[in-house]
Image 1 (spheres, rainbow, N blue to C red):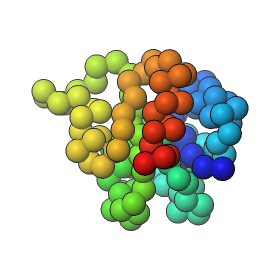
Image 2: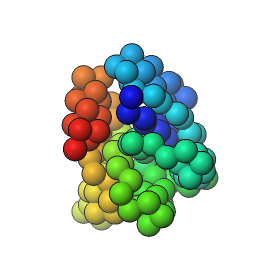
Image 3: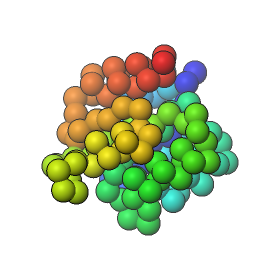
Image 4: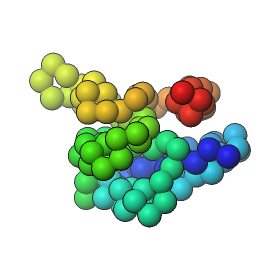
Length: 123
């Protein structure tokens, strides 16, 4: 059973993703921010990390940088809502440049989540 670590500061979003993935047969762990997510990954790695970008403690961009530096083979799906950007680049573009293998723009349909996770786990 593939394992997924969901890192998001919004309880409702995190729980919805966890419930959806568990119903689809994934083993899911949760973390509330990038710092907690990295601690959990260091303790027990996952086949895939779904990382929100804008979070307290440690944001997702910093989390992706640290995760990929310590675990170069880590697979990360970055997600964020709205049209957050720095200059002409949005945060999801930046996340991809930093090592995210796929991205999701919130809000997303649960089928899109499942398809994206399946595609990444099978890769």
